[in-house]
Length: 306
Image 1 (cartoon, rainbow, N blue to C red):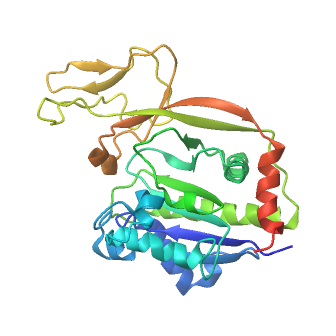
Image 2 (image 1 turned 45 degrees about the horizontal axis):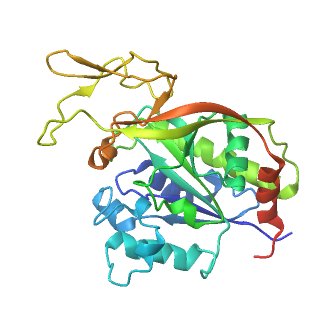
Image 3 (image 1 turned 90 degrees about the horizontal axis):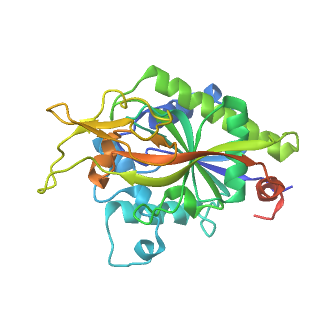
């Protein structure tokens, strides 16, 4: 069996400081988190932005892994250059190639501990199914959004995002650090069991499949003219039906959800998404049968030559 190499990334956004702090403590006290017999590399995604406690300096690193950006020699943005560095070090053709990337994030939204996958890569779905079975975490399946592309984990054969929240940007919070550590240790433990052939996969996976994102109501000059309704704020993962309140204006007029099916909002009022004109995203909750292909593709990462 070839030894799978796992890349752990924190600080992809420089104002999400809890996972980088945990990584730093792990470096100083290696016994606080076990490697579980796995080959592991840890990286700070955007160290320059982390130093300034900014989400990014020139452009969003977690939207910078698009081939047209990476191959454009005229692009010398801080984050485009950093994306190239990460791939040069840890990509499939890098000096220290990794097969699995786990990217740790925090959010200002009330997402709790959750998992994000991009598209339907079988190995990705196998990992989140294991973590969901162990920890009960909701899974956000992001697909079909042409305005949001170039995510870090998509550049590795297998990759998952861990989201922990809510926490203000730039704030260390005990509960966030503890939740991050729990998910990290569980992930490493389950991957080690996959490598040893000891893991049992669940029979199903519950996903929240991305449908679309919506912006705040805006005036003709693009100014926000309504805020998240008090009954919607902090209610990520809670289903809504037609007539459910979404936004409220200062005069108490309410903007309601209109639709024919029950949907589940996520990333409600995420601070970083205002610049992306996203007030929340709508998903559809679905239960999928666990497919043998998912297990095969994940196990194959441990057995194929690297």
